[in-house]
Image (tube, rainbow, N blue to C red):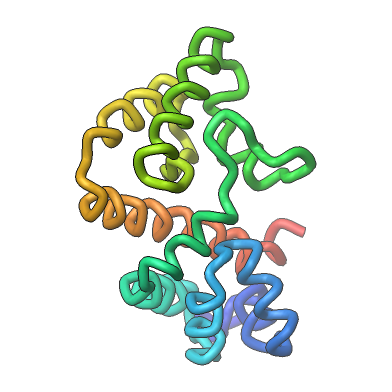
Length: 172
């Protein structure tokens, strides 16, 4: 393999039919608009090209698109049963004390009541305490400010998930 060739996982993604590509991207982000923009820009020569396209698509999402994207994320501390992705990403909460879990539940509910959606943070590599502190800090934000923070956090999550998608062949 030469350094100019497309990595195998990315080549496989580029070659997927539209339906299969939409399904694969839906695993990364529940926004149909985001997924369609990424599919329309194929083929990608490098993973960085894919990440750049993801960031650009994320920047253009409407409030409704963001709501669709957020609907695919479970609350912090309560990963979807049987979903290894959310369990892996929320690993920082796995060993949390009952007190911390109770705090997160209460804060999640207060946040959701204020903003109308789950508290969303790129949880990968964060401890339960760091996530709790972040929701405590962000619950005081104005809705417009919080929507832009959520957009940034979704972008980070999407990059991590896209990396897993296009690097799968290397780990198979």
